Image (cartoon, rainbow, N blue to C red):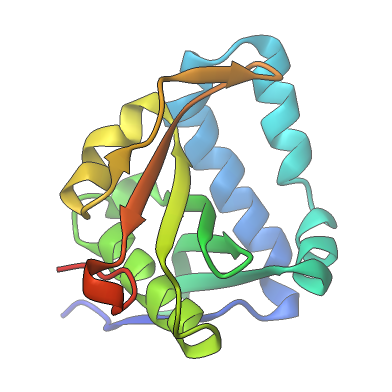
Length: 165
């Protein structure tokens, strides 16, 4: 029997596990698309010690936990920008990423009910995933500091706040 998936706020003691998960998944699926500069830039962003600094400013982090194991993570900036979304390779294609985004949007709307849109700078290999969640490209693929991404947006339908079907 499989343990129930729980999505909740990251606890301070989980930072090292969260950073490890992000780095592991990044190295396996995203890093091959980037230059050495881009890989270094990203890994610096997710180094242990960086998340608490962002949490004190304008970010929140959600984790997806199955049993005792963290299997996914989403980080949101300013209640409207998904800055990180990673799911352990062994748990992908099970709806965990979708569930994390759905909970992130609900959490953002709880803080800001007039949320007009949500944005993400999608890695090129995740564009189709975000399209399935209702995001559309808002500009061409870009590369900044060695990191390639497609800016994407999900606008609120009729002012109700962005949502995931």
